Length: 449
Image: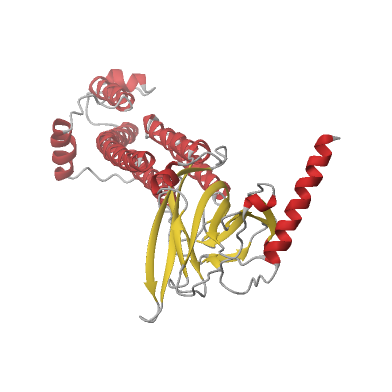
């Protein structure tokens, strides 16, 4: 019962103070007794959450706690006259409020309406309110997903000059910079710090205005994009390197690399919606994907050329002497290619069997007997039937010798293809490693910065 009476008593004094202050008060007039006195408005900002970062439209949506205070010389009373009541809440619509706005506003956010302000007995008015801020911001997505964005919120009086309204900070810049007490730290973006900058500017070199600019510095958390974008691409590129160990004279390497290229194309289609899109630039990760696609195309082209070389038997053109000297003699020494291609062993064994067959069969009776033909008699004159048999045997010998030369040419081309395959693979591997190290270094620097 006593508590209820006390609340009623305090409410009565609050109403009396409100009636006392509202008597003759004009909220449309700046609350100073001397018009030459400037009203000092102290402001403060705390970022509560990063709601949305729209890279395409260059818009940042944040939820902030905004505080401002000023001295109203007409809202003053003696606490002794009102039972030591030193602070009351008054409807915002009944008092003068400075016209301080955010210059970067592009849309009205869904901010809750706070209808009251606190007024102390010495005239200090405190207007605290949460605001959903939708502002324009220049977003640089080149470093995505390791990007750091810096967006500004500029508070200034829209009408009053510095002679009427001046702006100052409620806290020190150091306290403002490191304050993350109310920030929700579980989203995609991490708040690094808030910088403040006070400036006086003039539009026409006549009237000067005061502004307080807050720079909100945020950093994207890259784990999601690393797992879903970078790692699958890296795995596909590693499989492309592994594909070089398939024998070049088999058709499996070409089909394997074509499958990788198609898989990477499908991967790019899937991740295209994840990458941020702007009309003024492309993120580095998009360039990375395009270069990886180009490397896969180069790898497939190299494979097609090598397969064409090692399947050159049907062309029957010998390897040029300069190619033999450069590729088969100098290149293995310079690049430490000591082992012969294992695929040449089959052709070499077949060629040696052919040589053994020629040395022991052509032009001998044993050879003719093995071929199912009667031995050639040594007496003259030769009957017509034996002449026909000798002509057939000679034609067979010429055919086998021609095939033997073709196999020798094929073996040389196979050796050329093997050496070129190793050289091109090493060049491809060096280019990919250098490219990966460069990107990894850049992203590491951006992540630490």
